[in-house]
Image (cartoon, rainbow, N blue to C red; front, side):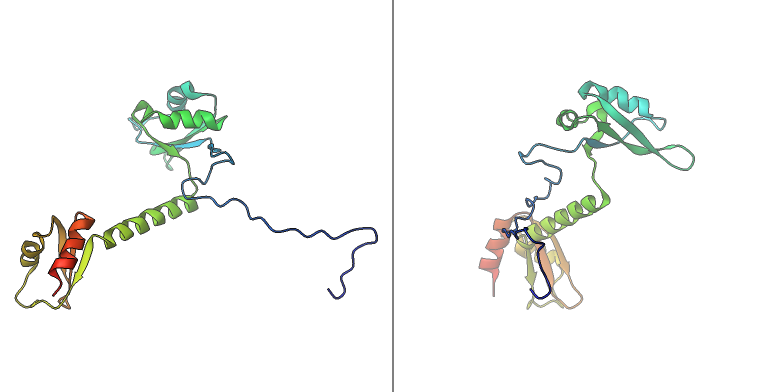
Length: 191
C-alpha cells in the first residue's frame, strides 16, 4: 500500500473475517448455547383499569427477583392496559413465560419496535407464501355469464373453497382451504 508503514518492530497480522453468528427470527435474544438472554417481559390484558405496578410484582415475584415493573399510563395517569416486568435473570423471565397466562394476563418477550415490525413482516410473508399454494388465478371462462357462486359450485368438486373473488377484468382468484385441493383443481380443471 502506498504511504502506509508499520511502526518499527510491529508486525501486520491478517486473518479471515468471521461475522457474528447469524440469528434466526425468534432467536433475537438467545446466547451462544441457545439459552434466552432477555429478561424483560411485555404484559397486557389487565383485569381492571386501576391495575398497578404492585399488582404486576405480586403476580410475577413467584418466578424470581424483579428489578422493575411498569404499567404504561396515558396523560391522565390511567392505565393503557399493558406494561413491562424486568427480572434480574433471564431464567426467571423464561419461567414466567413457561406458565400459560400467569394471572390471566398475556405475556411475551418484550421487543423493540424494529423487532416487532420484522416479526410482523415475517408473519405476513409466511401467510402470503402459504396462500400462494392455496389459491388459483382463473381466467378464460365466460365471465359475462358466470358469477362467484358458479365458480364456487364448480371448484368445490376439488375440495373446500375458502373464497372466490372476480376482478373487474374478469379474472378470478379461487382460494382453497388446503394445498391438495388447489393442486387437484389446477391439474384437473385446466382447460
